[in-house]
Length: 304
Image (cartoon, rainbow, N blue to C red):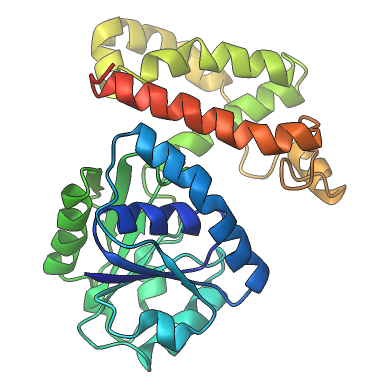
């Protein structure tokens, strides 16, 4: 199968590499030459992680191209991975309409824009679907599949079967809701974490320790629904009856985060956010975190 990945931001390089490892002919496109150069530079690190997972290289390496027409020529699947902005995505879909076959499936890796909303800007809405990868996409095996109101069932099945053929885990949503499932759960957790730090209850480093070695440690092996059964639904009802009223319900952005953004302290991409990062850390942290995730995945899959 020929697959084109459009947008070489934080997710594109890993997505393209994983698809290529599955034996597919993959092109990666970006209009920014610096993004293409960065994507190529990341390939050895991504390859090391894939090797660690025991995923053999079945196909040719990703071809990185700066010409959209060349990148999508003959594509069976185009995965859009451009910034989270409806107007930008709509511009990409309009360009694709003149370049790909009506039979080409177009998937979006949007993190939370409803598929039905984006579908309004697509020439063939029945062939349009959500394919939401999780970062880092070459390591995390779960991918959400979301159909919009006009997505054909066979389009959902096509993406589900592709994910399965890669040895990954498709999760097909029954409804198209903003944020889908993974990010709704994640942002609920992040809202409470940020609120606790912002209120002075705990320092960021201790919050991370609490989650990493507390609930996060358990959730890596026991899902939330199983955890409810393990703890007991009677216990959950008792605690939630008073604790739910105390949890953060804010609908805006926490002042701490808004202030950091206003100051230009965006996190690792600027070298400072909630933490400060040295040049050495910026180079080593992605590699170290990838190594840990690979090791954890191997354990959870029963390979260690």
